[in-house]
Image 1 (cartoon, rainbow, N blue to C red):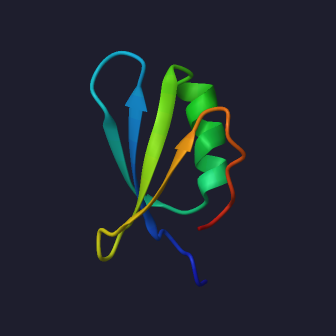
Image 2 (cartoon, rainbow, N blue to C red):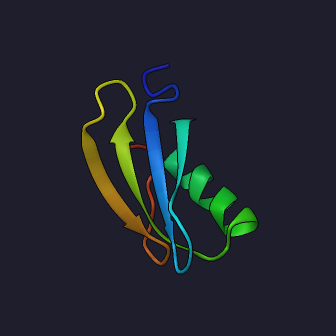
Length: 68
C-alpha cells in the first residue's frame, strides 16, 4: 500500500496541550476518530512520518481528504 501509516499528526485543542499521534493511515478516518473521542479539537498539523516534512493543516470545519 502506497500510503500505509505515512503520517504523524499533532492535534491542537481549544484548551490544554497539543497531542501527537504517529503511524496515522487515513486523514479522514483520523478526523472522525477525533470527533468521537476528542471533540474539543481545533486543528491538526500533518507531517510525513519518515522525513518529518510539514504537509498541511486541517481545521475541524474543513473537508479533510483521505491522503495528501
